[in-house]
Each structure stands twice: as C-alpha cells, then as structure tokens.
Length: 388
Image (cartoon, rainbow, N blue to C red; front, side, top):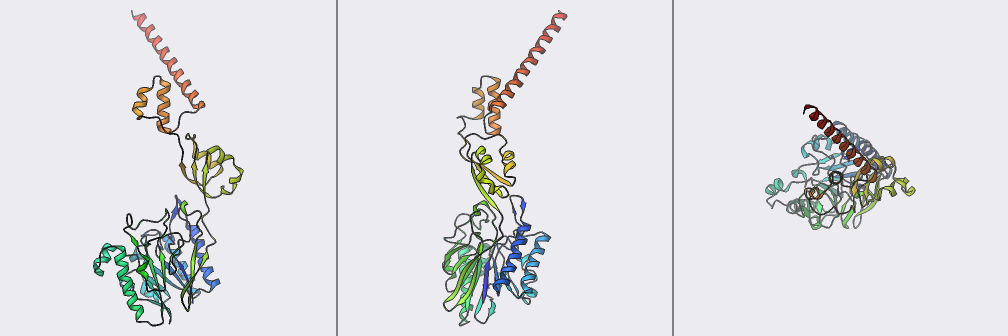
C-alpha cells in the first residue's frame, strides 16, 4: 500500500499578477506520472485545493482532469477542504464521486467516517473548521485547538472499534512548532490558531496542510507543503511530498521531490553592480525580487533593471540614506532660492536628490523663467511709459 501525501494545490493562484495556470497544469500532470510510476494506491490532498472560494471555469476543469486521470489509473483520492476553499462548492457531488474512488471530506459530520483503503488502513479527513461555527455544535470552546481535539477524539473512538487497522488523519491547520512562509493566509491573528501536535496522538500519521513548506513536526505529524512556490520566501525550498507505506511499526514516510517549479530569484546589491555582474546571467529568465542597497534612490530603477532582468516583479530598497531632519514644510521654509525649492520638491516626490544632469535641467528651466519674467517686466514698463 503506497499513499502520496500532498496539499495546498491552490489551483487558480497567481504570482505577483502572473497567472500560474500553466505551472499548475504541469504539476498536476507530474502528480499523475508519479502515481503511475510509483504505483501509488491513494493520494491525500490536505486542503486548499483551490485558491479562491469561487474558482474560474478553467481552474475547475483542471481539477476535474486531475481527478479523472488519477481515477483512470486506479488511484484513490481523498481530498479535504481548506481555509481557501468553499466547502459547499468543493463538496458538491461527493456521494456520486465516492463510488468512483474520489472521497471528498468537506463536512464536520463526515470527519470520523473513514475511507478504508484496504482492510488494514483507514483515512480520516478533517476539513478546515471555523471554530466559531464548529465549537458550539461540538460542545467545546470556539478555538482551533479545542475543535480539532474534539474531532480527533471522535476519530480515535472509531479507530478503537477497528482492531489491527492503521489510522491516518488529514487536517488543515497551523501546528505548534511549524515554520510558516509569506504566502499562507493567517487562520487567526497571533498564536490563537495554533494547534499542539498532541491533538493527533493515538493516530499512526497526521497528513497536514496549510503551511507551504514541507516539514516534520513529530515523526508522525508532517506537512507536505505546496507543490509550487507561491512567494519569494519559498525561493530556496525543496518542494515535494511524502510517500507513505505501512510497516509493522506503523506508517513510514519517505520524502519525494517535484521536478517542475516556478523559477524564482532573489537578488541584492547596488543597481550598477546588478546590471553589470556577469555572474547573475542565471537570473535573466526568472521572476526576480530585487533589493537595491544604493545609498540614494537611483533614477528609473525598475525600468533599468528590467532591461537585464525582464521578469522582475518586486523591487525593494535597503540602506537608503536618512532624509534630512524636519518635515517637508520645514525644509521648504529653510530653502533660500528657487533651485533649493525645486530640489526639495523633487526629493520629496522621488525619494532621492537630483543628480547632476537633472540639476542642470532645473537650473536651465529657472534661468529661462527668469529671462521671460524680465522681458515681461520690460514690456510692461515700456507700455506704461507710452501711456504716461
């Protein structure tokens, strides 16, 4: 019995405005290939199947193709809803799909009803549960920890009636001790949404979703992470899955890696160095996050960076010199010439001082304005003199 644990497909997600549809089609195709090659019996998708509660038509069709292809090669699928999913929409047709080997767990009532993969392996799917809605119906405090503890207790009770059966639970939550990334939507502010790993005691394996980095909380409590990178904080992460196999001692988890990835790069340095350094050629075709360390903000930095790194999508600054003390109004009050007024205005708007060519342009414009003003004054004096 081989079981592949994954989660957080986030079908329909974009990356800084760039559609990830092609990348998600590629990762879904890779999932099907891995299951065929490794002769996987079941796939567990632990929540956040979609990125939005109301996914677009082409996104729904992508999931439909994925489930159809897995079903065609005899792979059972157990799928739970996450905090990004609409449980009602994702769970539509669950009774019919169950007959085809696609088991949707999107309701609290079904959490303790196992999917029996064979006579020795039971999978329980806990959907993401809003504690304010689930707490009262379970008779517990409206917290994530209390709600999951109550549901897990029901699961342990069911498993106890099945001697010799290994129990796997799926959940979408933030476990204490886990490492988040920048791309997850917070379940609760602060640590209110954190759940101790002890909630899953008595079960052979907890297949968790929600966090996008693959990680182990305890030997039996693990996150698969998302198949694709969804933020620059994940640039160096190895994206993968856990392959589960039943052993005499329980469930053994072996890591596997996804081949397809969104190509990302994080670059840092002064603008001119980044534009000229030949060692950075590898980043040309990647989506880039660039942090400039120039002491003064360069002119047109994004436009210039994109001449070499055309897929730059995020520009940050670190180390800009401290602006002069005082408010903009105070600095204007200290200005003694029109040139100084223009320089203060430019720096206020552009966050950098005028460079030398720009300063000459400003001085030239002011000189022309003074000449025109002088000519107008002379013309006015001449007209008044004729009238006199």
